[in-house]
Length: 439
Image (tube, rainbow, N blue to C red; front, side):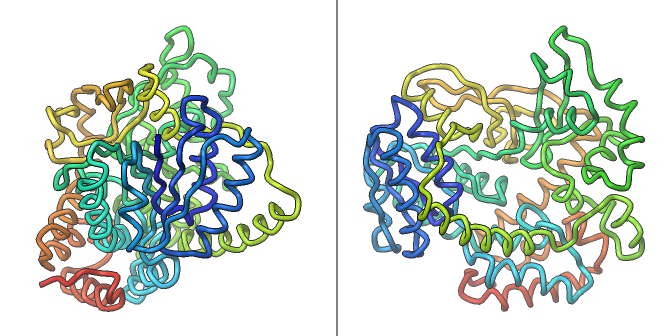
């Protein structure tokens, strides 16, 4: 079996996913093909993974493929492909995504999923993933692509609409959604045996149902504790708690993410909201700098002291591969096209995050039905931007980028149309060769 990891210079993530595979008897003897365009980062990944492989019994083998000219070789005959690339990296592209909008008075927190930052990230990533798809169609047409790269819905939606590659988008937030809620509210005693239903879109999928092990609805107790939580100035998860107050439901991704997916919380005319809801502006650039520094320190320690024992994580990738290979059943929260109206009050070309069954037949999405109207309305403000960005990537028409930015709820709440267009033009120019040409 061959498992290809694209973007293997993302060492910590590659270590987790491939390390998980090394914990599974049916996967551990695979060829693990590492692909990246950064030779230094991929060699660091190989050093760590080779040490893990030996510590796990020496099964399988690890091969490195560096540069675009070796991409087909990395993909050839792959059974599974994991994608974790970041086109343009922190420097220059993430810096540009934050600093240019800031000139126009538009502040962001993460800027990798929605907003003008998410739009730009999608437009520079989709052409690269489209090239992956062309290579895969030639050398591993039956492989399953597991996409971890953001903006999840835009990239996965494009792959599923416009390429023949079997694709599922995977995130970390579904697995920890209800746990984070109950832990935040001091309801740890309700964790064991809980039952839940989560559906919507990536980073804004709704915890539609949560019941304890006896089938008792936990939302009444949850709602009774929300005001006290938000009133505590030290608490950080306030945006999602405010969702519960105003929309009735909790959602999957963190409050720092969700602060910029709507027009409510980051507003130049209401600066007091930043402190009230503990919103960390410019969080992602800080996080990038800290992660780069932390990895240098960790890599040095790993080389000196050796790798630690790896325990299988809750990342979906290895569990999906195991279920398909062994033909056993497993449930995930997967990002898939809304074909057949899995969520009936969304368009069919939306990329949705819904429960999916995994077995020897692959990924089988489950029908959810209608979302509560207010939840669907919140999601549609994001879906509109996602679909217009995908259209821009497909047509290379700048007007669709303008329209995506104009429809973005946070951008539109702060800037007028002429300013939005001017900002888009400056961002395209600043990204230079990282962006395709638009007319």
